[in-house]
Image 1 (cartoon, one colour):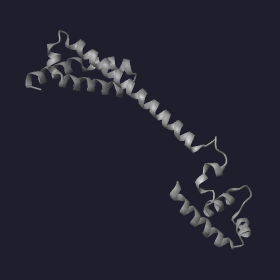
Image 2 (cartoon, one colour):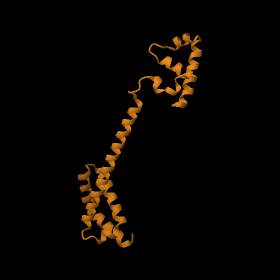
Image 3 (spheres, rainbow, N blue to C red):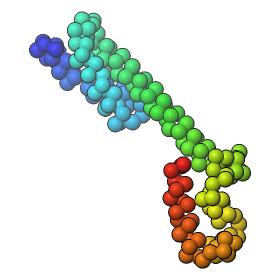
Length: 158
């Protein structure tokens, strides 16, 4: 951008910034977004100063640029909101597996693993470390240690 173009854009900024800010605020409903839109519009003006200077109505050119930038901001925010909603829905679907309630189906590749069987038995209603230890014929502390090791080994699958 040469000195003449720079001076033209600076003068246009001084004359129209408040008007453009009000227009953008009405379009976007938020002062911070409006400021961002006006700033982006002047960034476009700086990169296309030759086209702006050739325009018969530079103020109208800037109004259209603010309108287009504002539309882009609205579209971008809508896409971001849709993306976040989709991510949250997927996270919910993965965190709450409702269609597969049988752990043996869910963890098919582990159903014969001793660690998996130990942890599965412990997760059954009414099961305690003491009751599992008694079933296995070992002490409570040995059962606790075995459970700790099983959890550690199974973490590599998840």
